[in-house]
Image (cartoon, rainbow, N blue to C red; front, side, top):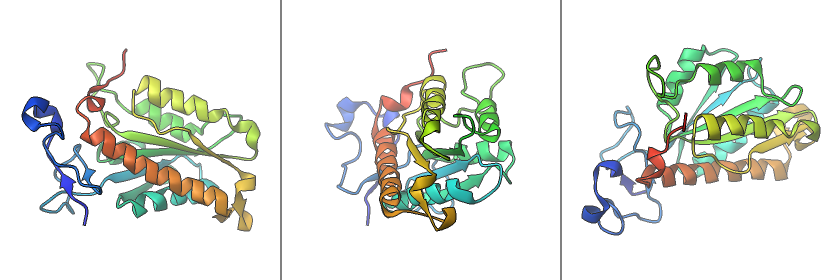
Length: 228
């Protein structure tokens, strides 16, 4: 059973907390500092929540297959997961889901080396808490990862475009490298991943949970904000 830490480290001086901070960190410790009112929280804490937002014009498809592999890896590390498909979810509802997340995955097929209009619309509408007219800051201190799919390796540079938005504009802790899977990574007509890409996706999911845990237990990573 994991040992959970639910103390907000930003309010506890390290000089009072000791070398290990306010909670002793066991080998399987999991932090979730962002939300304390989750319905399935326990007396001792809760698991990291990973929310995957998929920008495909149609629900399902190869991008969902790729995301499922990443989420499987996250679940193996004890995380809870949720999938939001923009094809059948309104942007405000997707933003509300991100508000609850400790880690987020932004996934999209690529067209002309770029993400879909659906995912662009979500990013455009997501507040950063930097302007007087904005309410909320759903991505602050949220560990993020990207999952892109494309017909061939020619669209690979789309990974850099969306990662620049997340790391620069939103200043989120971002898992590297971004995951890009071309058609050759899929089998069964796109219904499954081949073994090596599947294992790579699962590795990204495990690493994302570890990154979210590190951010949640850090006093300083959680304070970083966009510069402008």
